[in-house]
Amino acid sequence: MPAGLRTVILLSFVLAVGFLLIILSCALWQNWLPLLVALTFVLAPLPNALFSHCGSDDLATSYDNAGPAVDLGRFITSIFVVTGFALPIVLAHSEVIDPKACAMSIVGGGLVYATIMAYSAAFSQEDSDYD
Image (cartoon, rainbow, N blue to C red):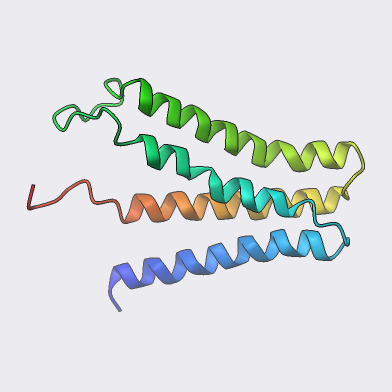
């Protein structure tokens, strides 16, 4: 089995476990507010992906020469990630959701976000032979 296929199968399994934890955190306690965590973590990589090509120079590959648009994308992505972790904690603190649902939602959301980041890192097309 090729390495790329193994990677896709492993990442899809981890993504399914993450979504299962988020959905179970909602279904077991009959409160569907932790489902917002899945939405936050799915939307988190989008600003980084959209702004990553703005104003980039092909010769400047260092992190320091990224530019303000790329920094804005990273900032918005970090806001989504912090919101994904903080939202269940705030909901559990205000007793809107159960603390166990909070823990399941955080772990599931972390798995979803880590899977999306691992997929984008594993299959990035930065090193092309034809450029």
